[in-house]
Image (tube, rainbow, N blue to C red; front, side, top):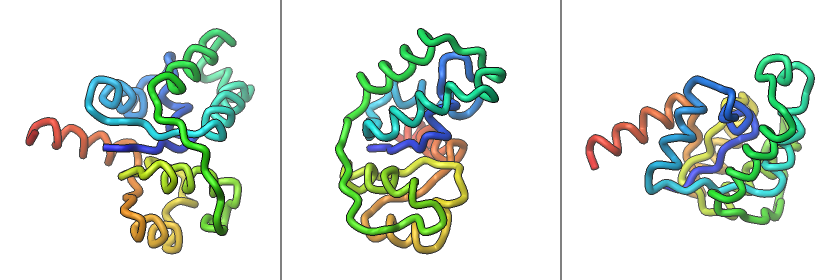
Length: 149
């Protein structure tokens, strides 16, 4: 399965995190699945991990942040999305995420942000064979696939 992960999920996958997103990263890295990311997502993830609120939560050093971004970069299929039209009308800054999934031919866009769950984004993605799931839903799906082979 080809999976594009939104910044919110990528942030929660960091080395000091615990929870569904961190477990999801481990499942993706152990399995036949492929992350489909872009420089936009990696740069945004690094920037967000430096926010004071997240620094307080995770206590990440610059080395921790670099290590996380480098792992994602090394293990991902990097695409260079072209924004063809506005899709996420409530938050245009999320369009590069959608087009990373589209241009990378992802099967799933994993996001928690409610902007991805509007009718127009769901329809746009569905027409391109992309399902939108949160980290818990995707983790359950991957676990079921592993059991049912």
